[in-house]
Amino acid sequence: MSQILQLFVIIPLLAFLVSLLIPRNKEKIISWLATGITGVHLAGCVGFIIYWILNGHEILNIKHIVLYKSPQFEFFINFYFDKTTAVFALVGSLIVLLVSIFSRYYLHRDEGFKRFFNTLLLFFLGYNLVVFSGNFETLFIGWEILGFCSFLLIAFYRDRYLPVKNALKVISIYRLGDVCVMLAMWAFHHLFHENITFLKFYDTNFIADHLTDHHSLLIFSTVLIVASAAAKSAMLPFSSWLPRAMEGPTTSSAVFYGSLSVHLGAFLLIRTYPLWENIIGIKVLIIVLGLATSLIASSIARVQSTVKTQIAYSSITQIGLIFIEVALGFHTLALIHFAGNAFLRTYQLLVSPSVLSYEIHDMVFNYKPQPENEGKGLLQKIKNAVYVLGIKEWNIDWFMFRFLWSPFKWIGRSTSFLGKTVSLVLLAIVFLLGSMSFAAQERSSIQIDYIASHILSLLGLLLVLTSFSKRDDARKAWLFTIAGQCFVTLSIVLDDNVDLKEALIYLSGIVIGAIVGYTCLNKIKQVDNDISLNQFHGYTYEKPKVAFIFLLSCLALIGFPFTPTFLGIDLLFTHIHQDQPVLIALTSFSFIFIELAIVRIYARVFLGQHKKNDHPIAYRSS
Image 1 (cartoon, rainbow, N blue to C red):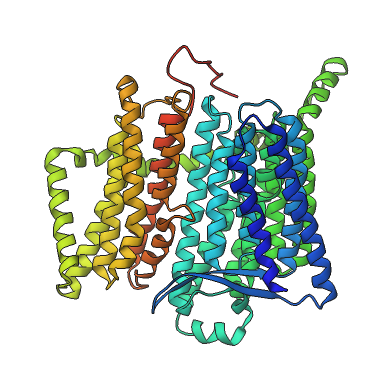
Image 2 (image 1 turned 60 degrees about the vertical axis):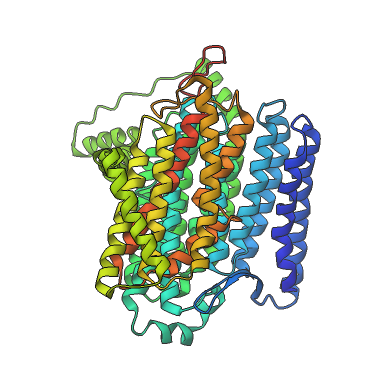
């Protein structure tokens, strides 16, 4: 029976691959493929759940395939099924089916019709990988797929300024959550010395034996899980990304940010609940986080003038309550709440264009001014203050930029001297010496290796931040990012006794992606001799094939699943020891900004309004 679980992932994978081969003008075939596959998936879920309940509804767990194995590490795909999986899978299949049917007509003759359904099927694959995952590695594959699908769907109207700009904002928050999951995986590797499955979380004796001397590492890992869940579900202080994500088509807003993807933070908390159910501090943190988010999001939703923004903050309000229910252990209630909120927000978003026209008609013909409130007491002043804060969305967006991203941009601008010839020569010498030391397999004293690895990691981070803030030439920014990745890799392999094969797994994807990407940028450079990052160029109009190839090279560099870089990142992280907090911090920041720098290059060069006047000009704001 457990062997059937893999079919719920294989079916959307095959559908996605087939959809890539269908010509873009075959709308009926594309839409019928998506509708048929999601319908089959839904029927399969219903049948499997009924059969599972009638046969005792025991937890199912299957170790599917081992992708890599070494004496210290095993990377395998694991599938898992319980009542949480059943609810999320059933709700997901039904909502994706409804959205597929709706999109057939909503996006009819739209230029991006095929692109939308390709991305929707890829999202469906990532979603099923997450909800059927039996370990963190499998979950993280789906987690990464969902993050990049979000970027593609928010930037669906890629000839406009705001969708592309907001897509970059959203993926920056998503990447922060991704790295938190990676760090949690790293912590669990050192806690349990194996690729831990979710089923083992319920083995109290096993957990207790491993946590006796590592309680602080457990606290660290659970805080990271909460942070990742908060980023994924738009809890404070990350709430501002959800209304910005509504720049995509209404159908993608319904399936992503109203119903499914935005609830996966709660799913992650339910999955890891046995780890932190006895840690009062973590439970209080989640309750306070959920309550504060619900109150603030509710105050914002009540005063917004756009329908999508109201729905976004209303959804955040309910997800905050779901977080509280999970923390209190009311998981059945949380699952019911998730299903109700998901269906309600999907319906609201799908009918929002029609409702908006009805409201405008009603306001024109039946307008009645509200009576003036003449209260002047303290209570009225508080209400006015909350009203103004709600209008400004409590300045959450400004807060995130000012205190999270702006300092790193300042560091990147301050290290622009790394682009000077002298600095590049010195960096090359340092890297060459480190590479020779690793190749010779001759280690200096432990202290020297420790210091050298930290210096190399710091240089790698500075190179990546320089790329992240670079504004002049996309090719230079691209090379700085590649150099930063090489320094980060060398810092890890030099510090620990890393097998050369493991380093090559990571670098194989980097080298191929770097060469292909640089070739694509050179082709664009030859068009009009200008690919600065000060503006959006929109070259996907004139060079769609080059844009697609460059996107693939970007995926190889950021470690997208099904590339060797993805496996390599996991392997490299396992070689950082738990007594090296500075090294893990530097490496984590590097991986955050590597993806942001690379995606920024892609967005600036290939997306947005085209710089030439002979192409259609979209409004700056959508």
